[in-house]
Length: 297
Image (cartoon, rainbow, N blue to C red; front, side, top):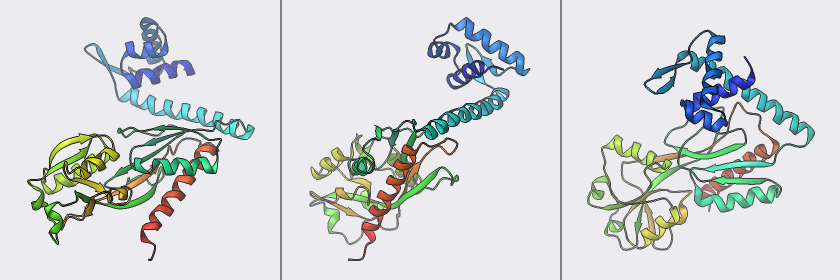
């Protein structure tokens, strides 16, 4: 088996579409089909099942892909490690922010103050994904991952109810879920990590909030709350700035909701000094941020 064959197989396996893979690889579809056929002859088994006009990776293909991924990861790691020894490793770091975007400006300043030469590519996406070798991901979940190798817990925080000035519920000593049945809510987009966390808790208690507005920007949510457009459930620490400009944060009686803010990286990849430095800065920043809330008055 040749590396080029395996590279082509990897792309086919990821796209599970010969035409799309050929376009991505800038090769003709018949040529790519012949390469795949020769590879299947070498391993002695079909690697894909043909379903109509589609191809689907089968059990044999899954085994090969698992080892191919390891091979290319090892080769990438070798190149990065050599570049690091030579002092030529890239200082580019991809930072994907899936949660706590309101803290991004401060976080950016901390990283650049530590090393101005680091080139940050900041991405704001909603979809969870496996980190690339040069990528750090700030994400959140309602539970801790089972794998303890590839993440660091940045902080744990309550999710609370945000209400605008003058709302009748503010006069109540306790707010229960039943008090919210007739209220209108503002929510981040349904595919955001916060919305998925809330959906977990709502489903567990069979609570269906009346969401009348979906947005994709926390700052706009704050303005809509202040404008008395509706209520919202928001994280208490990383979104503490919401408790200003006429917005109040309250707990819901007998309905504890929490989220875990995580920093993730690829445990199988060689991390360049720039990635490690960024990782350490982010961990220190959130450790100080967390302590600030629990410091004795």
